[in-house]
Amino acid sequence: MGTDLFVYHGYSVMWIDGAWRKASSAFNKELCERFGTKVLEFNGHDDALMHPFDESGNRHMEYVNYRGDYVELPLEDIFEAFDEVYGDRFKQPSTRERDEAFDG
Image (cartoon, rainbow, N blue to C red; front, top):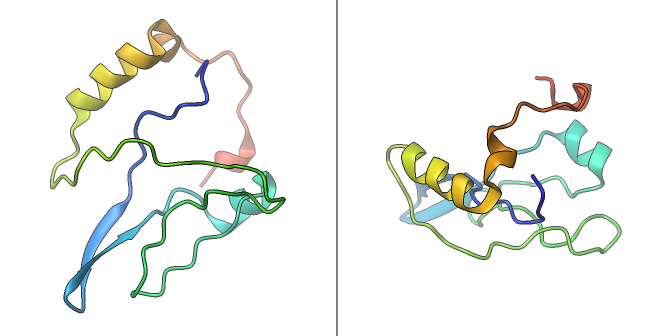
């Protein structure tokens, strides 16, 4: 995308035992193993969001902007932010070959 900034990252928010719990389901175990990230474990008591460090201890990701919780996906807001940050790179069809790691 031409930057190390991923403008939107979605996760689920669930009401469990009197508290809101956040859980990211972005990567399955196989993708985590392939890219050296830690597998997220959700125990129902703690948030399960992406780890700040990978398996080698390198900075992996950081949440830098909380955009709120939504009942409906804010698709127009997402597209506006993508246009602002990624510009035409987001609109161009990918020329990279398909990566089987992302297949369901």
